[in-house]
Image (cartoon, rainbow, N blue to C red; front, side, top):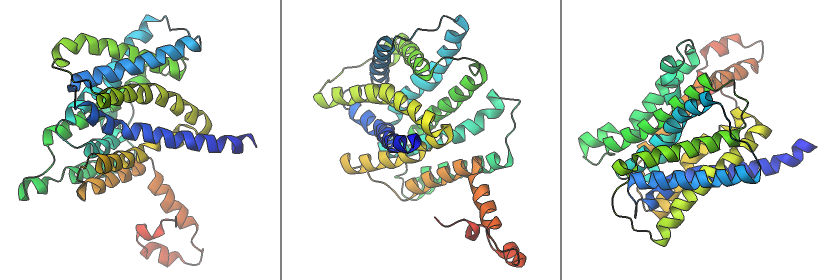
Length: 328
């Protein structure tokens, strides 16, 4: 009975989280109307850090004292926050927010690509290797190199590479945390607060080099950068933590599949951005690669095989894998 009462609230939190993270790319584009990419990243981090520091104070959480934890968290802060936030903001000066939101879905694929580097003792399974290959194919479809050759109106390659660099940072940062911070007992809100405080500090150090230029603080720009930091950097972490506790990390991570949908919808409706057929198709192939890497497709095929009557072995061998998937 308790789980049934919690389910609707968790589902609502899941939907709100998808909206917050999916709208980040729309908000970045609005923020860039009056700020440089470096200023967008710094403002986003500062508002997020302030939100989580207030939460730390209200909930009377203690900051860790371990120097080792703080040193490792500095690397995590740089690779999960400062660098990718800056790269995504820079990317959106060259590509639509719709494309940036789709590229963001490649994070799990980038994680697989970096496992041999960060976790050398871990080997990719067959499912992970297949998922990696499919995901890379999805990126190629998303970029659409044929458009550049045939019409010259393809996506900005530097912009896509910057966005892919951001997701590579996400992949590296997640693996780094898994390797060096798995033994810590620090709760997720404190971890998030440490990340954003350190990331803000790093952004301030880099500010004289990457956050220069005039600012036009219109009401739209201020609202966008505030929402980007407070909601995306503060509230989202709390929602995500609650969802993980109720649904578990595997189910909670499926929010990744919804954020591109939100990002593409907002960009197309409110920014007038054109969506070419290869962009959502490429994103769908990337998601297919993620599912394949998690063994979901193999499980669906096995489930379909087990549901076949025992007296039809010949049909099983002759039926293509696609038709063995269970009905939705």
